[in-house]
Image (cartoon, rainbow, N blue to C red; front, side, top):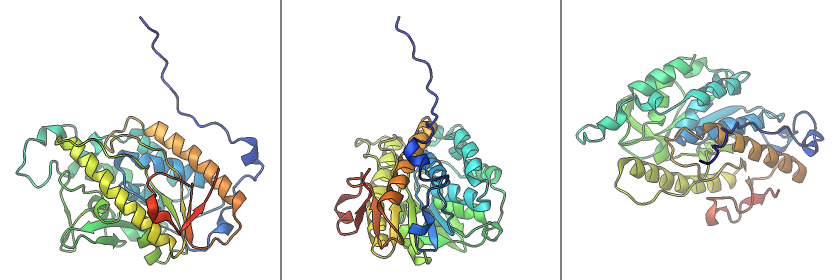
Length: 328
């Protein structure tokens, strides 16, 4: 019998000497014209990537002026906006424990044969999870400006929700069509923002951002063609997210500087929570080095453009003309 390898502990190494020489906090704030908005993408279980990205940003002198998020990004953004001092620490507990059962219940696969209902599962489990995580009831209770993005089911347009009760807005932003039911707010039905603005960089600019830091959830290839419900949902999410991502980044970067933090690739399904720690660790390390390279290569304030790793996954030809490379 072969030896069974020991379980791996996902702990990032200490900062290398060349990063420590840049100071206790990376001087990032002076590069970005304010106000600075964090735009946080949806991505299901891959939202853990943003926890790692936020850890890297916390090692700079940058403090965001506002946040906007879609789906999983809306959850992380709301937790951060409740109290920026402890938000990243709280997200550690969220992503260390979050699993499918907290979002769709224990027996959701048993509902897959019922094709008559409006969604495969109700949103009772995710509502309960949100009420357990969040302290604030209303947007007005948050410590910093925050908005959630959902898709108006009647028009298909991205809708920014930044007032009223917090939990219904987060439910709407994460209501994956077919899996979770639409959410009614002020007489209109909303579904997951994935269908209209999964990485809401343009919406951040429209809300007055002078610079945008884009916190994506990792580029990935579509799953193979299949009629299985889990694979259909996963493939649809990837296809929609990829198209939205390129358009959002390109259009926002024409107007303001946009930092696209690097993320891990091909993390698997968005309902797979088994790689949470490793995904967050890799995202943290990638972003930490990217930010160090950025402050070494550029002097502020930055001009409009997309500041990203050259040849980064998922950028495509839409990056032409706006890409400002941040080479390692």
